[in-house]
Length: 222
Image 1 (cartoon, helix red, strand yellow):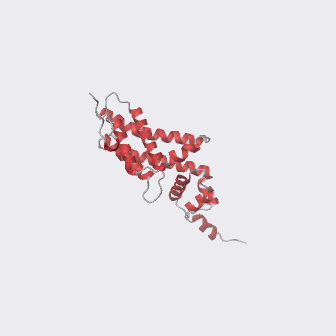
Image 2 (tube, rainbow, N blue to C red):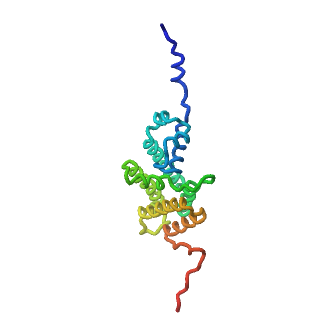
Image 3 (spheres, rainbow, N blue to C red):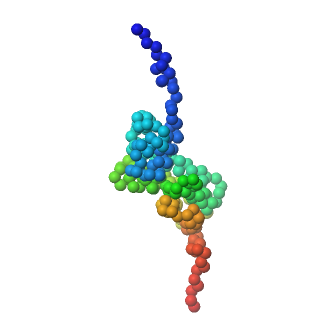
């Protein structure tokens, strides 16, 4: 007896019922909000609209899915930094554009403060997970390199003192970025974090930061 293949052919040709990019974004936001350990497969299924077999088939297990979200986050972060730092903007404005962009990620308008996915979740898991630690290190290096590229250009253009070290200043800029991420998650306000960024930029560019709360420096007694 000959069986019809129309049903099987239709199933094979049917488009996927999910968008991989949207599913990864939803999984990323779930990990971002709850952390790796605090995120269950049920949480991921609910966020992506995919059942467990579909999740495994598309992305692998929970660990593999988490690594993919970290990779995408670092790629998106580096691309955003490169865009903010390119062009003819003066160094100070370019750096502030990076920090303003980061604050948009750390303090979303319609959600709780979440800080940085990499610092907030991968730094915790890196202690006992070699693959996460490798991605954390690679992510930090990627952000350092983005800053360093712009700082080297600033040195060549005379925007920085000739003795300045672009690699060290890049690490300082990255450290400021990571500190802002932690403080955002701890509840610091956007205005205080932006003031912190401005003070850090002043130090990087060779100026003294503004005095806290607008207080003038005390005069020396004669």
